[in-house]
Length: 185
Image (cartoon, rainbow, N blue to C red; front, side):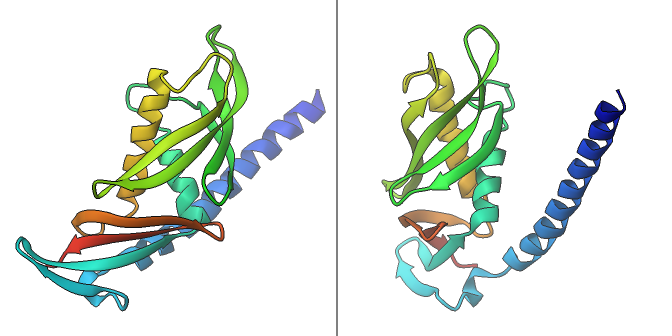
């Protein structure tokens, strides 16, 4: 009986430590991310008929990738593919996401999804290309919603400026490199 009480206290203490560490990481990351797109060292101003835009390059490192997936898993209507994300593994062409999901009988089970990133007609698109979840296929409404939610979540990571269009995305060395055009203020 005592060991379960200690485990509960240790589990809560561990959760508190993780929360504090995440908070300490998020606040500086948010502060460092703020800025004017005109001040980007790697930006090239391009004049178009709609006004000036600047080409920007962003690299999303591990922390931003985790946040992108975790925030993308929070669906306001509760119809999510994963109940909990437990990890990810970056491959050259896709990211494999692990977590738990609800089976048709309501029980939780471990599963994974392989997610690709691409640019289509100037928009950032995510798509599940492989699933290891019993009873769920690519046409499942949760899969389609997941694709949209994850894409929206990653776009929100970049919304310091008004994005005109995405031009390139690559998975490189455990990071995501994104190039896009943004309006100049």
